[in-house]
Structures are given as structure tokens and as C-alpha cells.
Image 1: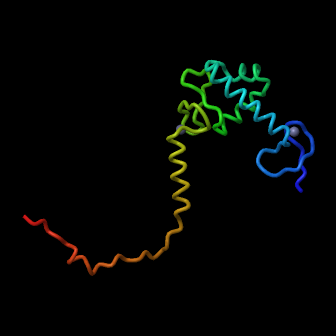
Image 2 (image 1 turned 90 degrees about the horizontal axis):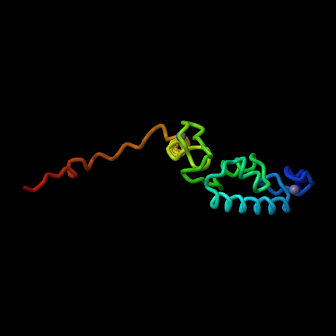
Image 3 (image 1 turned 30 degrees about the vertical axis):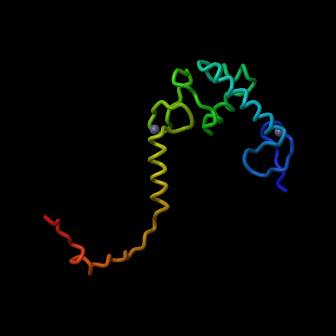
Length: 136
Ligand SMILES: [Zn+2]
Ligand SMILES: [Zn+2]
């Protein structure tokens, strides 16, 4: 048992992982999210403050959904999100596709190491036989 205080309503609950909120709050939050998502589809030009007010959620909550890439904005949206790395305008999340790609690559490189110090030498005995000339 891992008893924590719900970060939304403050009640004690049995924490099982993920967000630090109790089950009833999780459900309520999911409903909020669906409302907000629908609201954004219907009001693509609303800014964060208005979305928060009209849906009874905090702007902080909306920003969290954006960071989690659960909310996506259209091109004409006044919500100007910027890549946290290069400042490019983005529609959701924290980084643009380019920076995400770079970071993913860096991650892969990190995982690819360490390589064996002594690399196996390719077998060379077939070099001659392998050399082929075009028949003309
Ligand atoms: Zn709660
Ligand atoms: Zn970027």
C-alpha cells in the first residue's frame, strides 16, 4: 500500500502510479479533458485563458495536457507554442519534430554504446575472388 494525498482534491488514496491523483479525480479529469478537446475543435481560435474559463479547468492543467501532447492546436490558433529547444512554432508538446528527432538520435547513440573496443576484423581472404569485372 502506498497512501498519498491526491494532488487535486487532497484526499488520501492508494497510489498505484502515474499521476498523483485519486480514482474519482482521474475520472473527473478525463471528463474535463474530453470537454476541453471538444471545445478546442469547436473553438479553434480560443486562447488558453478562455478555454480554462469556459471549461472550468486551470490553465496549468491545459498546459500539462499540451506537454503530454494530448491537446493539439490548429495552425490559426492564438496559442503560440514554441519548441523549448529552438523556438520554432509548434502545435503540441514541448519540442518540434526536428528537435525531437535529434534527441531521439542522441538517445539511440547513447544506447548503442559501448561498442566492443576490439572490432572483429572483416575476413579478407575473399577479396580477390570477390573482385569482379564487368563482362564487356
Ligand atoms: Zn482526488
Ligand atoms: Zn525545435
